[in-house]
Length: 361
Image (tube, rainbow, N blue to C red; front, side, top):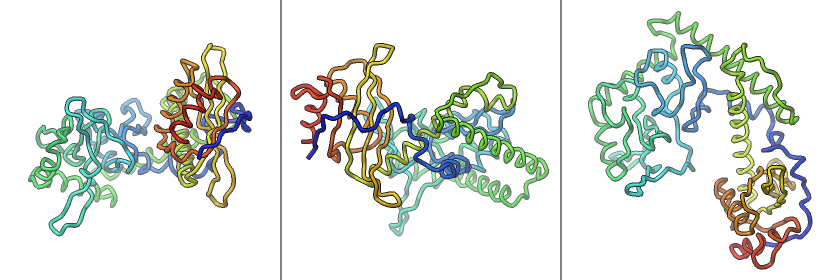
């Protein structure tokens, strides 16, 4: 039963940042952003290989890898290993037949009936296709799983099974495993060069950790990133990279907030629509839950501002439901609404509260 309140929201949007960076301890953020294997969890993320003029930031999306892989790039990719697709990731459908990739393709069934993960299979968001990690690193010939990616979802299972049993795939997997073992044991031919490369990689990762700490500290205090000097570590101090760091921190925090909301299950929504200087309506969205982290207590999470092109109840309702859907929060678990006194919000016939109550009475 969704209850509605006509009071003003108890939490002013102006007192929040977008999103709440202070909700998570500093060390938790660095633990999730600094380790190398965590950066490759999300397809499409682009952690830098090293900030030298010779190398560009190396994407985890195989469609963005250079057509010719140098030994240095191949070594870095072997260090990272194949990127994993998150369990709740939604694959894009083909416009032609409406088919899409599926999480079942990342597992294979053995003769005994046991299911085993296809750890070598990596997904490309850019091409909406699948690549074979080891065959992409050590290609013997040009096939779908090494060039543009395999996107024939109708026959994907048979194609993947046939590829796994091929001699070329087994040879590529052997080459990948041998290089991986040698890198871990430090027995490669260019051992001295690899030691220097590893020292340089560790140094730049430490620099990136410090820069992330600076950005987080300024964001918590709502302070601007001032200055015009980009000569030192220009690959990291540019405004594009600073914005990317903020976006990465923001996405991680939002993910933790959504987990807290889902754990609490039931929630209330606090909405406040305010016109801004650009003559558009800005809708602040705050979700109130009984947080079960540590000990039960009431917590309000600011989920950001939504720019409203129209101020009608129908448009605002659509924006709210779309935002909840993007976050993976089911509106069916909403148990309360709080909003301002605008007619488009509290209207009994066409207001936001009336439309939302129709969907979840």
